[in-house]
Amino acid sequence: MLKILTLNQIALEGLERFPRDRYELGSAVPDPDAILVRSEKLSADYATPRLRCVARAGAGVNNIPVEAMTRNGIVVFNTPGANANSVKESVITAMLLASRDVVGGVRFVHDLAGVGDAAELGRQVEAEKKRFRGTEIAGKTLGVVGLGAIGSMVADVGLRLGMKVLGYDPAISVDSAWRLPSDVQKMENLYALLSRSDYISLHVPVLPDTVGLINDERLKVTRPGAVLINYARDEIVDPLAVARALDAGHLRRYVSDFPAPGLIGRPDVIFTPHLGASTGEAETNCAIMAADQIIDFLENGNIRNSVNFPALLLDRTTGHRIAFSNFNVPRMLNSVLSILADHDLNVVDMLNKSRDEIAYNLIDLDRPASDELLMRIQAIDGVVNVRTIESS
Image 1 (cartoon, one colour):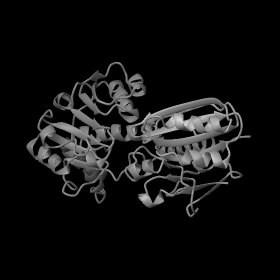
Image 2 (cartoon, one colour):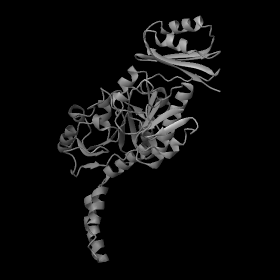
Image 3 (cartoon, helix red, strand yellow):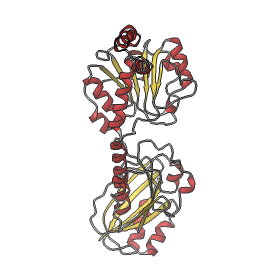
Image 4 (cartoon, rainbow, N blue to C red):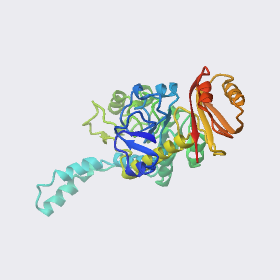
């Protein structure tokens, strides 16, 4: 029986992917084979010898100690794109809210609740509506920073709304490049995008080189009166720099899903309480994708959408498979193959890939591997972990 520790409230549709005759699930399952988590912060103590993988039902993994997991040969999955449509819709909402003072207008009408005469109500509305006028977004320029699953969808909607769309992403993947509409104009650097955009939407992960990405130096080059939208991560924007840019007129408005002290209450700032992916559909999609990745990894050893291990998919050719991870040093695979030969085991199929300092291997054999063989592989200097995966 495989044991899955579930943290936070996971959508039922995801939990139902695990066959109950093979899996034990729960929030108090001890010594699990896998962890399925949303936002709870994990410590390195979760990296037990039995734990094989952690799956985050969401895109960011800043609540998971990825480096510690990697050192222990534990695969960390995320679910890129599963909540992309939800975040995309939030970003478009933010753009529309920033184009006119919709929030101020709603508050104004709310405060008229005590006006009982319809004629007087109409008079006040007509007299004050000019305070909330704004601009259309059609014909404006949208700059999208980060062209992954969400950024490419935002770019596409911008085009459909009649905007000129600029994009910048120095690390764009092949898949993202294929998804990106051809009408998006690619910028060579961030400064070029910031200086030409009326609306700037951020869609980059938190990495060492993206923390504080939007700072005083970069905000000084923005087109005067630009709108900055952050539905990515709070760490990529310096809130004090935003306040200074608003005061100086480099920014007209800031809309973010991450409330920051010092900016709350400003009329030129709109905060939402981390609602970007808060839809039932997004939570369901993330839970299903995370569950499917765990199942395929535990039952077949396949890896997809990992943030610390290479993607590796190998169709089953026999019912006898070994999976092992090792530090990415020379001659590791040769050492394992030599042990297999010593035990008169034939390799029917195999696949080996590496990512940074870690390598991962799947080997299909003509018959089961013995405990002695696994012990010999585990004893190789540089092997992190090894397991057998038998199928009926």
